[in-house]
Length: 441
Figure 1 (cartoon, rainbow, N blue to C red):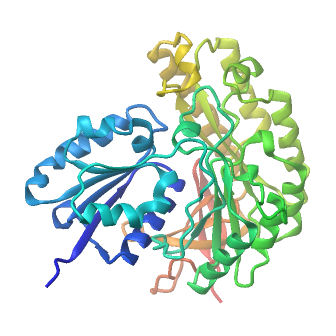
Figure 2 (tube, rainbow, N blue to C red):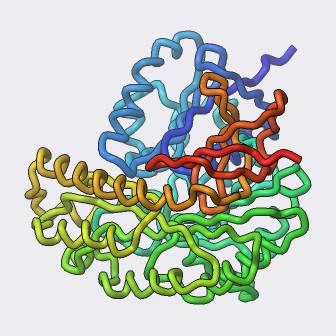
Figure 3 (tube, helix red, strand yellow):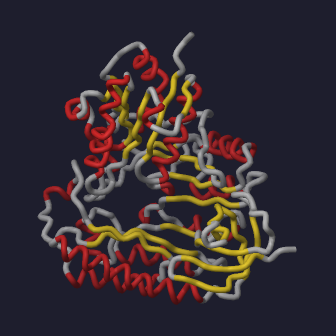
């Protein structure tokens, strides 16, 4: 009797990585593997890695070191994703018990690599350079999210921001055909999902290989698939953000009224050093398009503080931008040097203590903005999609179309299922969430 093939997969990082893992899991299952819940129960242990933030590589190697004792039990190890692409065969040197190293652009070759692994090979690599034109499309995606279906429409990045490792770990921008995206959207609906999130490192840089649809056209087309109630997309790049995206959000009710548009800095001088290829004024013009929309559009962003040579005046310009734009959410980070990036040649002149201070000042200012803005929604009635239940607090957790967390109560003792929709009257607000009561018929 053949030995059962089992695997354990742990994912680090962003939504793109999480969705990549869904596709990897589906591919493994198609190859006869069964997913298990712990490293100890698995024959094959995989880590899908991220290298965006500082010390990501150390975290992965620490995890590998923690479980290297399992090698004696005949278990095999694989490192996938951005750290795999970044470190390449050096992983075999640092962790010789690893048998498989594959970057995300090589996942399409997973069946072949698994066959080689099963045949006894001990050093298998799947590493692509930026010349690859391939995307990882599979009908075997094992969707792990109970209420939202993800679709990657574009992989890679051509922007080469000075601080970012993604162009080197994810390859060049490669878009899927609009036909394949729409076919996957229909499959997702058939699986019971009513919310879809379109993904890409720069999702709005999408270029249809078939030449049929622009990004805005694709958004509208996905939103018009029968059975879809919500469509989200992330992450957008300001350089490719166009007015027709706003027009699509206005015209198609299923497109969520939320845009995540990373600014990174409010200073044009810093943006130039970051190689972001736009100015503060350019960015604010795109914000003005959204402010003029018929539907109020919720805005969120990413900001890096302490980039090399960022002056106090540069930082104040970023703080002023918060007040001007009035974001509903800000993800703030301290600059950290990443391997292979152009910023490595810049002198990281801002002391770590100053970076921490600036980040705290930024988050404090943003928290006050959100406290005021969220409180303005008290008394409104919002459609909320259920994401889960918090028994300890006696609340149901959900999300509005504007991507705001809503915690609410209801009189029914039976909790609604994840992915269901309820109308909720907002009765209170915190800086990061809304509170309400379900309106029950």
